[in-house]
Amino acid sequence: MTSQQGRLRIRVAVFACVVAVALIADQFTKAWAQTALVDGRDVQVIPGLLSLTLVYNPGASLGMGSNVTWLISLLAIVACVALVVLAVRTISMRWTVALALAFAGAFGNLIDRVVYAEHFLDGKVVDFLNYGWSVGNVADVFLVVAGVMIVGMILLGVPYSQKDLDERARAAEGALSAESGDDTCGEDAATERADGGMPDPGSGAR
Image (tube, rainbow, N blue to C red):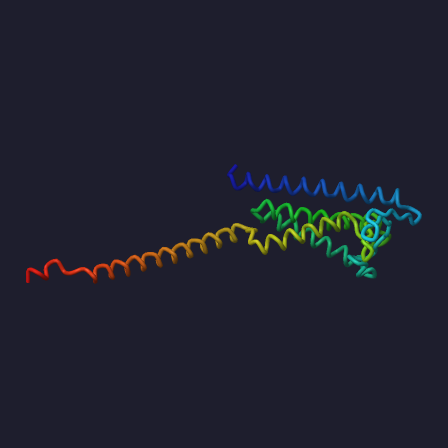
C-alpha cells in the first residue's frame, strides 16, 4: 500500500467517524425533542435568544419550499452524493472534516424526510432549536459550521486537491525565480559600477 493510499484510508475513516458521531447526535436530540417537548411545551434556554420548541418542518430552511418537499429531498440526495465524491477527492484533512459535517447535516434531515414520509419523500423534518426568527435542529447547526469552515478555508487558501498544491508550488517557484533574478541583476549592476570606477591596471604602462 502506497503512502497516498494510506492517507486516503485515514481521511475516509475520519469522514466516517465524523458523520457517525454527528448523525447520532442529530437523531438522538430529535428523538429527545419528540418525547420531552410534546403538547406545545416551550423550554427557555437563553431568554430572548434560544428556546426549545418542537416543530415539524415540511420545507427547507426558514420554512421555504414547504409545497415541494419531495424536490427538496431529491436535491438533498444529490447533495449527499456530491459531498461524498468531494470528500474522496480532497487531500486535506480540514476539508474532509468540513465535508463530513455538511454530509451529516444534509443526510440527518434527509432521514426525517424518508422516515416520516406519507407519500414520496414528503416527510417533515424535526426542528426544535427556536431562535425566535427561525427553528432548526442539530443537523442545521452542522450545516452552518461546515459552511463557515468551507468559506474560511477558501479565503485562507487551504488547498483542496493535489492540483491546488501543485499550482501553489509552481507559483512559489515562480516567485522564487523572479526574486533570484532580481537579486542577480542587482549584483551584476553593482559589479559593473564597481568595475567602472576602478582604473585599468594596464593604462599606466601605456
